[in-house]
Image 1 (tube, rainbow, N blue to C red):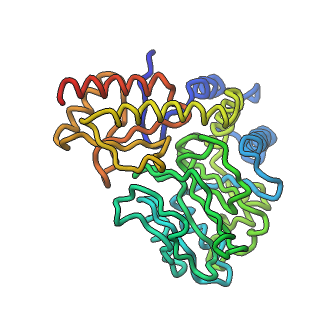
Image 2 (cartoon, rainbow, N blue to C red; image 1 turned 135 degrees about the vertical axis):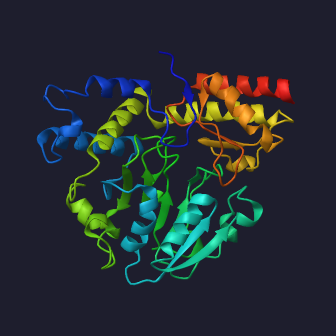
Length: 365
C-alpha cells in the first residue's frame, strides 16, 4: 500500500519502520508470549523496555547525569499545572514569555496557582516573532521563567536559549515546553532546568509526556500537588509510581532507536533544515501564498501559510487529499493552512507538497 503524506500537527506521522516493527511484535514481544499492551509494568520485560528507552533518550540528548528523565501522563497541557505545583516552593510569582497559543495556555493555567508576570509578549504583533531578551521585564525573584521553544499553532521557534544570569537571575530555573521540536535537533539540556513535552510530535503516540528536570529542583512540590504528579515521587519510583503509559513508552523507545540508526540528532537537524528551506523557499517565491512569521523565528516543524482568500481553503484541501497530502488545514485559531514536517516526514513528502503548491497557484492564481 502506498501511504499518503501526513502533515498532521499531532498526533503526527511516525517512521514506517517503527510502525512495521510494532506490528511484527504486536502479539508476541521478543518471545515473551505477550503484547507490550498486556505486560505488567513491573515485570522484567517492560522494565527492560523503559530502561532502554531512558538510556537511548539520555544518549540522544546528551542529558547530564544530574538530570532525571520522567515518563509521565497527561500531556504538556497537564504539565502547565504540574510545573508550578512542583517549582513554586515558598515563592508566589512566576515569569512567562508569551509567543503564541501554547504559551498563552501555559500562563493561564499557572495563574491558578501563582501570580503570573508576563515578562514579554508578541501578541500585539500577531505572534510573528520572539521578543528579544533585552526587552523582557523579568521579576526580581520569580520561582521560574517559562518559555515555549516552538509554537505549534503560530509557527514560531527559538533558535537561541535565554540567559537568565545576564538578567541577574542566577538561581532561577529556566523551564521550556519543547513539545513540538524536541529531538528535531541537538539541544543543550544543561542550559535549561526543566524541559517537558508531549510525545505526539517527534516521539510517539499521544498519552506520554517527557519531563527532564535538574535533580536539585526535586522536592519543592506544593502540598496540593497530587502524588502522581510530584516529580520527586515519580523520580524516586523510576516513573513507576503509578502505571505509566506502557505502550506509548515502548513506541517512543522504538523511535529513539530509529533516530540513532539515522545518525542521531545532527542528522535529524540537517534533514529538517533541508525540508523547511524547501517549503519556505516555495512560499517566499510566490505572490499567491502568504506567511507571517519573521524569517529568523520560522519553525522548522510547523509551517503556517495562507491562501489569498479563505474561501479557497476547501478547494485547496480537497485537491491535496486527492494527491495523498493529508491534514494541511490550519488551526482554528489562525485559519489558513499548516504543514507540520516532523522528523518522520520524508523530503519526498515536502517535495510533493511543493509541487502541489505550484500546481494550485498556476490553476487559481
